[in-house]
Length: 98
Image (cartoon, rainbow, N blue to C red; front, top):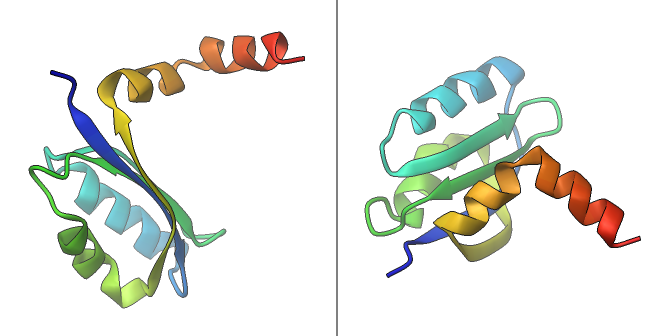
């Protein structure tokens, strides 16, 4: 059985760079999260998590002070997450698509 993960891309109404750094750390220490990236300058973020262990509502509650808006949401497999993390695959994909 392949583990299904939830990928959400966010836009924030307000978040300062130091708040983004603190929030990213707070979310990343949760064992249900696989990837967390929050950029306080561009006010964007990406979170990949196991929805069986942590609900989207819990994440949005944690983010509520920063006015989060979900820009994209989809399910991905653990294999897709690992493959997307390998920079050589990203480079080869671009080369092969040309």
